[in-house]
Length: 192
Image 1: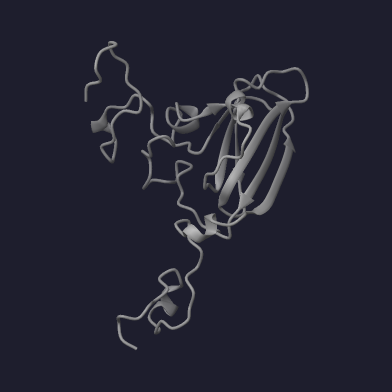
Image 2: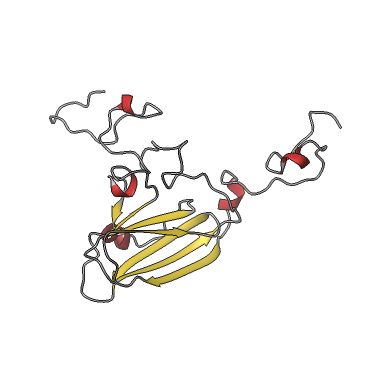
C-alpha cells in the first residue's frame, strides 16, 4: 500500500507508520456524527457545604457534551445571584474571574438544554455563598478528548474570545488580533 492510503493519525506513533486499511478514526470533537444523535445520559448532584474564601468548582465531564442543563440553588434562603458559570479561567482578570461568565440567575433562567460541546464547566462561588447546590443533566457524546481551553495550563490558548479573554481588551493586545468583545461610545454609527 502506498502513501496515499488512509492513516489514523490519532493512534500512537508506533502504529502510525503501518499501512492504513480498516482502522477506524477515534472519535474527535470535530466529528459531526457524534452530535447528530442523542447523547448518553449524565446526571450530577452536589450540595457544596460551607467553604472559607472564594472557591472555583471544576466539573469535569467523562465525555464531551452534546447538550447540557445546569441548575444552581441554595438549601437556605441565600441568594445565588453572585455565583458565576463559565468555561475558562486563565488569570484573576480573565475567564470566569474576569468578564467571561454568566450569573447563576441567568443559568437558572434557561429552560432548554444548551447545545454546546464542552468537557469542563467552571463555577465561581464567592465567600458569602456557603450552601450552593449544583445539579447537572447532560447528553454526552462518545468523545473523550477536548482541547484544553479551561485553565492557566492552556498556554497555547490564553486569549479565546468569550472563554478566557477580557472584554475590553484592544485588538492589538490579544494573541490572535481579535477585536474587543465590548466597547462603549456615543450613540452614532458604529466605527471600526
